[in-house]
Length: 175
Image (cartoon, rainbow, N blue to C red; front, side):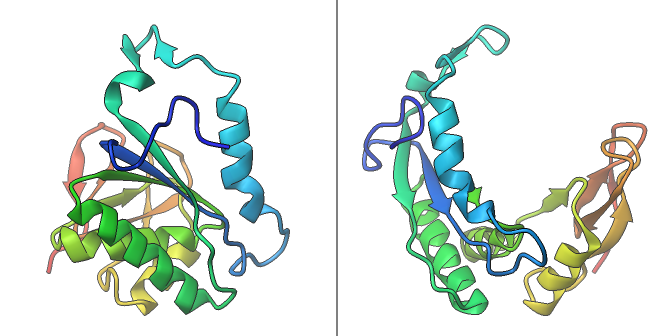
């Protein structure tokens, strides 16, 4: 099943990739079912948004399906990174439907190969993810940061910016 209104990947401007991975989940399993569930749920919405005055059919959306991922974390993240990099190098934008939170590590790693100065603002993310990103040498400056204006919970920021209560972007990590 494809995401609503998604066509062929070759003709797409935006490519959806499913990453059904949950081997980094600590407790409850089931996040590997998310890509299929999101696609199934997309069948019950309309492609046109009255709020944005835009239709998904107009953005050239393609669905590449789910990746077949290794059960080994490093290998799976490498597979995700390679796939994201490949599509970005073809001039496509990429949306990754995860799996557990570690899927972000692979997606960001692949994007950084193409966009070396990539900046990421993680809102409401866990300090655990920040530590994983540091260990993978993806964002060595990453550290926990409170995102006061967005979620009220701890989040992360790197080299980059996080939203503050004043809704402006502020540097949180300087090299």
